[in-house]
Each structure stands twice: as C-alpha cells, then as structure tokens.
Length: 171
Image 1: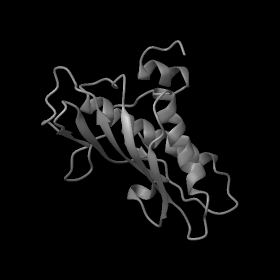
Image 2 (image 1 turned 135 degrees about the vertical axis):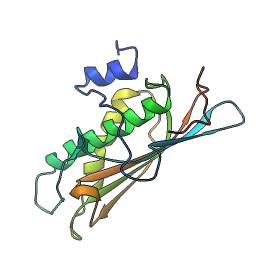
Image 3 (image 1 turned 180 degrees about the vertical axis):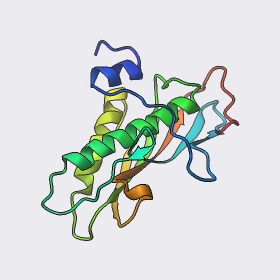
Image 4 (image 1 turned 120 degrees about the horizontal axis):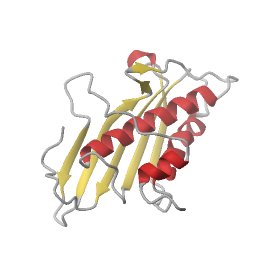
C-alpha cells in the first residue's frame, strides 16, 4: 500500500477523521496508563455514530437492510480513532495494538446480525492499520443508546512509547 500514515490510508479508503468527540458527561474521551516498558495502555470511552454532534438514529430489526447500521458503525469507529489521535497528540500512531473492540448495537430482541454490523467498524480499523493483528471483539445488542444512536464502540489498545507525550494526561 502506498499510503504512509494511518490518516492517508483512511483517506484512500474514503474516510476522514472528524474533530475529537467531546464528552457528554463526567468522563474523559480516553485514558492512558504508562506501562513499565515505556508503552501505554489506552482505553477509549464509548463513541457513538455522531456527525457534527448529531447522532445517526436507528435500531436494527430483522429483515431490514444492514447498510444504515453499517454506515453508522463506520462513523462511530472514525470517532473512536479521532479520540485515539487526541490521545497521541493530534495524529494517529504508526502502530496501534488494539486488544479489544466492543460494539453495542441498538436492536430489537430478535435481531441476530450484530457481528455483520460491527464488521464495518473493523473494516475502518483495518484500513488504518492493514498489517495489524485482529483484536478480540464483542458485538452485543442493546435496547437503548444515547440519543437513539445506532451503535456505540469502545476500544482498548497498547500504544508504543510516544515521544514528547506525557501519558499521565488523559483528557
């Protein structure tokens, strides 16, 4: 692949990072914890499918097209990656070891294609870091999400040592 940075790879795949999502409560968008080897554990707070602060509303139902929910999953993952960039001083790191990806899909009790919805978010992650191993992943259905959003995504990762970044600062 010709693109040199995760942002360039995302752009080549038709995606662009949004502005860093702003918390809508008493929490930080991310938390960094230093590890003895100089790397940092990174936890990204749940990010929904907001565009310019407005949630993409919806709920998955059996028999409905998955594309609206999959588009929302891509938006939510881009919001997650914007929080990753904020944690790294404004740019995505060249390497990101994602340990776990969690997706909460707003759906009816009889909807069963949660994984297919979350695959769209995983595709965005893979576009940014195509050589990275796949993370562990959880996809579950929920009855309610903030502002009736289709999906909320959380991410846990390990960052390599970040030059010039104080990992004690987490918001």
